[in-house]
Every structure is written in structure tokens, then in C-alpha cells.
Length: 215
Image (cartoon, rainbow, N blue to C red; front, top):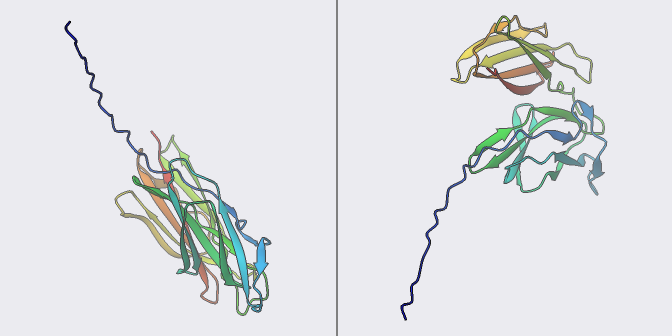
């Protein structure tokens, strides 16, 4: 009797890994004094602040960065979407969270908050909220922002807009206005926008956003 054997071969097709989506911060609430905190035993100058953000598809991890002005106070890698950080009371901070995987990283918008307690100095401004509007009929991008300061100080702004090649499209300093003149942009290009809010004491915060002009 003839016994035959058959074999089959299979090929494994590699699945392309896409970069993670853009995370959205939840707590501390943007532009407010945080109410979700824990007192630090035996240290009235500190508060433990809870940071949370929405989970992002394709993300294998996150990096939380907390800034005092332009100085990083904390940089924490996490596999989940909540982290507790001990910070000084009575100060304004900004923060971002970056989602990452093997294909790349995607950073959130910059958010701001103030820790509870008495300030030992003048507060830094809150990070500005950036708004963009693309007018397809004229191929123009309208960039505006809203800034605020807990002390009520008058603010000026330094604005930087770069294209995807890193070339400056707009670079203005000392602006009192909160809207740029319309910018002529190219379809399919991504533009990064940075707004530095500065009070009369030299305190400042930086807000960053980006927009891709869709075809």
C-alpha cells in the first residue's frame, strides 16, 4: 500500500504598525486650580496630584511630562492612563502626555493647571488655548488663542508657526493681540503652532498644537 503525505506551506504576512493616536488629557482640568489632590503628610508645601488621560488605540505606553515654565519637573513612563505626581503647592504648571509604540510617538496638546494653596510668588500664566480654522476657498489658515492669568496680569505672546520641514512661517514676539493675520498654507502639509504666554514679571507658559491641511 502506498502511503502519501501532503504538506502545506503558509506565509505570515507582516501587519504594519501605525503610530498611536493623539491622547487627550482629563485631569487636572485644563486652565483650573486642581481639586483632585492628596495632602502630603508632614509637608504642607506639597500636594499629590492625580493625572489622567484617555486611552489611545495602538499605544503600548505613555510618557507624562510636567513643566514649571519651560523646565521639566517630572517625566514619567507609564503603561496605564493615570499617574500621581508630588508637586509644590500654589504654583502653575503645564503638562503633556505622549502615546508611543514601535512605530512612533504622538503628543497631546499642552494643558495647564494650578496646584492648591498659597502662592509663594506671582503665578505663571495659564497655557493659552489655541484655535485654528482653515478657509479652503482662500487656502488660508486662521490662528487665534485665548490666554489668561490667575493674578490678572496683562499678557504678551510670542508666536511661532513652522511647516513640516521645520521652516518658520510666522515668528512674532511681544504680541498683545490674540489672532494672527491669515496664513497662506499648502494642502497636505502639517503645521506646528507654539504660543508662549508671558506676564509682566517674566513668568511664562508654552502651549503647542498642530494641524494638517487636508486635501
